[in-house]
Length: 386
Image: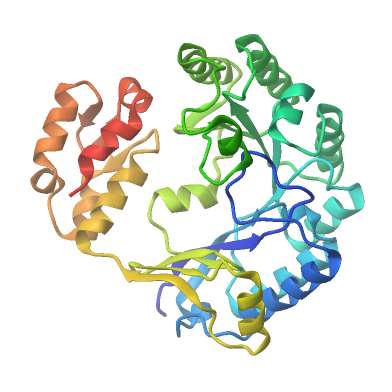
């Protein structure tokens, strides 16, 4: 019997009630009819369209599924159930360990969450961003903090015992005290996982038009840095361990799906704009909604916007870039097993430099960023470009 490889599945739901001012994801508003057409197309892609001529059911066993967006929780329970049944038809999901759906307050009901649970969803990722209503308005969110609390309570009532809460720092007008208040309020709820990201203003967003490339004046760089340190300090004190640069969890609740990206597990993306990485080949579906739905209605292969075979150097770079985001670091032995090259031969100079600068520590087989290295991770990781 051939051992199957692990696979992650990402399902893109591109719809929102209203697009947030900072968002540069592939998402937009749409009426009920367009959503229905999209779900039909998505189910067709899963069940009928060629997926690069790979028999996934015989070659892979699905370890994780992630519904992202957009706001996947705009979908009704029966729509999620239909997608899950399609996935079970095309893929071996008999041993799936984690099925996540992103959920925004203001879009969830108890009936909907209970239906998700029955369909096989076992993890929720709730987008709070801030516990301050003024900051939520600044971001263009559709909810207030009270609605978030109602959503969290409903999630627990529906039986979800694995919940992530997304937070954001460096919001225009946000103070250190305000961010600390958000952290403390979230900690008091004891979610299993917390993700905290600093706001980055991307070109093409309303925020970029408002603030430009330099961003808003507040919070200043020193305040933003203190927010960054405060996040780790308060979450560690509350029992959350940092396992990736922006992610914290209670023991045993690390996000398996995101960890699969960082450790190089194959994954397939379904839906518009969704990216895949299979056997060193990266490709992504068309981001044009109507081209996607037209192709899927004919059970044709979905148009790709990118298709390229990664070179050995690119694969080694990704191993370093992504693996070193994990606090535990990477294995020199695993590097050699994957690439048939010694990591100290390929990266002799950058490793020597980064160790000397105190940004990396090497302990036997293990190579990882130091605390100082994590603070300047983008600069440190740039050294691994070949």
